[in-house]
Image (tube, rainbow, N blue to C red; front, side):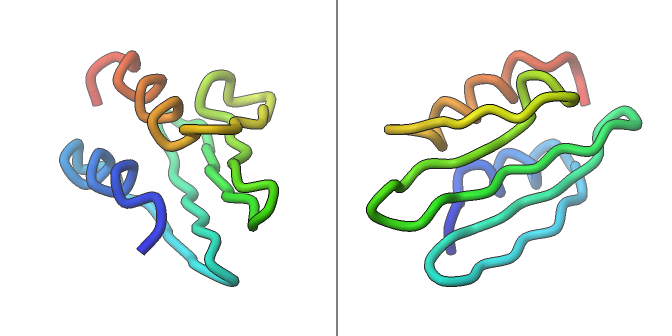
Length: 80
């Protein structure tokens, strides 16, 4: 299972999400406060992720330690 820390965080905050895994890459999509968010992993050798968790209207790429970086952003959100 990929993106395990993010999945656990979303479960703990009772935030429904969809998870897919293909070619050793995880993808998560979920809605929060009327906005749609995504987290998509990149395959090796470019391992990283793309997500719009910082700004729902704009995606950005995360490199090394991408799961930890995305989790830190999620933790700054106001109450679920």
